[in-house]
Length: 150
Image (cartoon, rainbow, N blue to C red; front, top):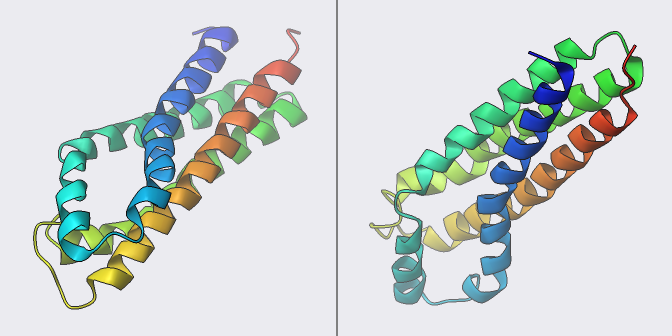
């Protein structure tokens, strides 16, 4: 597989991975202060979104493959590796703050006593992941831009 194809795939998959995170970030100001009934109702729009997590896996793999492919050039290598590290950080944030909210609420269908804390963690973890996904996209794009055919 040529370097340009790997670069294209890493950028395209990274852009697709940013879409759901960006949607969560855009919705945050309108959702964060909703009452319990309204918030749980609105959360229903995310049913089925778990499949979009496969984009994070694909982005991580694509950035690791890109780092391997461009390893002979230090700057593109470090940038691709940085993008992969960003995606890995997104997984860590998801496991630490997002997933516990999903589990405790049975995907926002059951209301535990600490639902407001879970909501805050869930919303802000998605917001942080949107910023990290954007950074990863910038890093992988910069890697592609500074790579030189040898």
